[in-house]
Image (tube, rainbow, N blue to C red; front, side):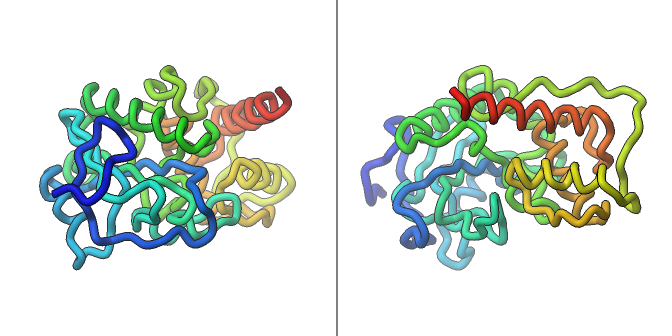
Length: 255
C-alpha cells in the first residue's frame, strides 16, 4: 500500500507508522547505515513496519537490491536510538537511516552482495544530492553509538561506496609493529588521541586516560576506517589513519 510518493525514484513504498516530525532541523544532514541483524529481510521489513516495535528506518535495502522506503525523508524515523555525533544526541532528527538486510554478527555475518551494495550506493548518492550531505557525514551506526552497536560492521565495503563518490575514506596506514596506546595508559599522547577522535565527531571524553570508553570508540573507528584489525588498541596504523582523515577534512574545507 502506498501512502506517499517515494523520495527515491527506484524505491517501493511500504509505510511504517513509526515516525514523527524532525525536532531540531528541517532537513537531514547525515546518513546512518545499519544492518538489520535479523534472519530474513522479510522479517526485518515487517518488524520496521510494526507499531509494536517502535523502530523504523527511512529505507531498507534487500540482498537483491530492492529498495523499500518506509518513512519520508522529511520525517524523523526511529533508527539511531541512544547516539551522538559532534555533541548532537538526537541523531534521528538530523539523519536519514538506511537498514541493509544482513543477519549480522550473531547470525553468521555473511558478506554484502554486490547488487545490494550497488543499490545502497545509488540510494546514498540520491540522498546526498537532495540534502547536500557532506562526505564525512555518511556514517555507520557503530560510529554514532559505539559500544552499543557494531553495525554495519567490518565487512561493509566502504571502499566501494567511496569509489563511487559516497562517504569519506582515506587509505588505511599499514599495520606494523609499533608503540601502542591501550587501556590503562595515560598522558598527553592519550589526550591527543581522544582530541582527534572528538574532532572527527566521536563521543569521547578528553581526559588523558585510556579507559574502556576510549577503547570502545577506537574499536568503532577501526571498524569503519581500519577494518583489517579491530581490537581497540591505538597502534601506529590507527593513529596515522585518523590523522590522514582529519587532514583530508581540512583540505576539503579549505577549497
